[in-house]
Length: 422
Image 1: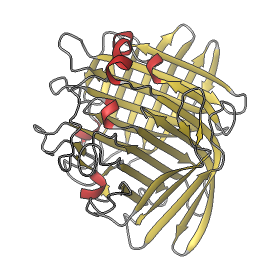
Image 2: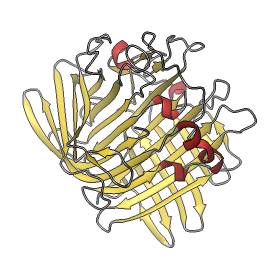
Image 3: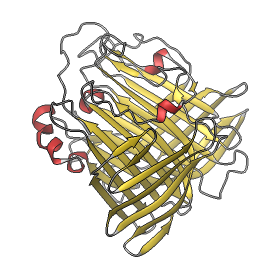
Image 4: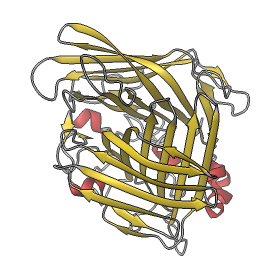
């Protein structure tokens, strides 16, 4: 991750943050450019990631992540990492690796290095696949494929070239803004292949997703908090009425540097989500701007949808100092993408907390320990950031209200509550 750039002003001076959820709305069709690696090194600090997640039929959770970072500092080259994790909730065992890749070359949606190769095929309007082959060390190897079916297109929030973009700075134009954040999603994908840990192969046939994200600014200025949720029905256990069901959500909360009326005017939350079913993909795409209570009517309302992640009864984690949720409630509500009518969904993680092994908490990820030494060395001194990611895996029930009926969908939830700074 990249963390260095100039500090923003601390003097209130009018709006300097423009959330996509207040200026665009609904389903945005992806183009090839949307999931092509950008690798921008001419506009200051950039962090770009591609993430693949999957959940197997026994609840085992797997993550494969590629992180490309550019500090925006002369003579400091860009770095590329691959991070891998697998967690079995039945045995409570996890395997984690994070390696700095060498010899990296990017080619549109594909990438190749000395340690891994990603082969992309297909297009946004047809079936797409990512074939990932990696040898991270002598004990961890994998050959995995993620396939997005043609009938389940990916999405960004809002149509057109600016779909998905939330921008920072007084000016929104590319050449004048301070930075941006964007996410593009494939909520519905299927995994197959094998991961070998030691001499034990693991069949990774499961229900997966993919997200491509770019932070076009130093991450500790982009957000103080993040929430992420991925719900899926188990592989081979479709809901009787809706079939395969996916629900995804991504939320970030700005820092004090960027508010509805400029610096020190409060923090704004941007929440983007979607619900997919095999009967309708996508079923809904939701997005909501959550304004600070002191300035509730500053941002325009582009959509009446609901998209939220609420931390309930936060408690202080003595280890990190952050106020973490005792439970979390996620909500989605929007007009159908296809056809007429509104669909709502709700999911509650009844127990969260800060103790690993309780409430489905599998790890508190100390981000600074995972990033390359050259970046880690100066982060605290320069930014004061101390980022932690709380990762949870649980059985869950998604409550879907559709066409006057409430349907309880059983499945698995992977979610993250991330804290970057106070």
